[in-house]
Length: 378
Image (cartoon, rainbow, N blue to C red; front, top):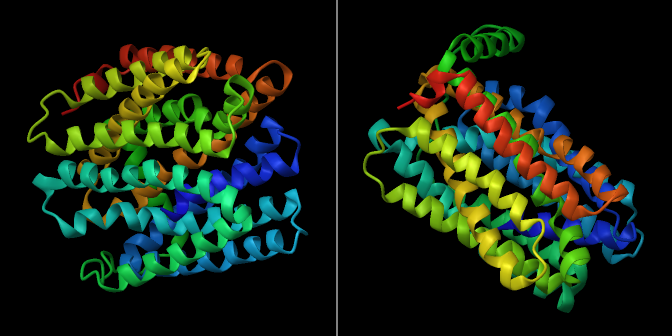
């Protein structure tokens, strides 16, 4: 809930500080992505060495602290863009420590045969907040201003720490490695690169993040340009996207057995690209809302299934490190948004989203034909 409210509130604050610049919006998201790209490997090693529950509590406490600094700067009306960028680096670093443990801890809670259902159900909970959080943040910005919403986000981080204290799983480290951190990182990278299935899954995740996730960064700018949307309208768009993601992950969680998982993965990613390209040209809410719902649904199916397959193909003793490599691809999302943000700055945001959607569909099909083992993944 806190994370999704923070994405919208940070984006709205940046638009206010930079006169609605889509490029600066993409740069602000870059501050979150850089640490995810370069620090997540360390987070993965710690997820295999340190109790995962403790790592999550540490990261969420840190997020509460740094977000309170941004809220105070905003309240005092002294906040500048570089403040948002630097604090974003801190949030991104803590996220890089948090996410490998947060994803890998699911396999500590449920047996392997239920992992797909558990990951999808876990993502359903996260996607539920993608419906509630943006709509709430958009309305609360009107009543409390961005500083008030940021303080509310701090409170939510504190609640998440209190919830984690009650969890019984993840209290023991999975590994007892006496090697250096560098050796552990090399071992995890070597395992992922030498396993053709994991290598293919990560390549597909890379394509999805670089070309498919740009809309999450550019949606505030697109909403202002195409629909003249205010903060409440933007919250509605993000909520619809979250509703689609919730439906997609609930459908996935309810499936007892999926035989051709690789085919489903490729199909979801291809439809994601086509739907995004069509959505970019929407002239009204009537057309935009159902297309954004579809984008949210198929992207959530893809992300949940891809994450599950990577976990299933990784042994427990290296699972944290392999998941950190997967997190690195997600950290590249803001980096992928930079060129599309520049295209939006020079032309229109709708053009940038059209190009990214078409590239996603084309690159996915290229991987499907170039890596036939990906289609046969079960």
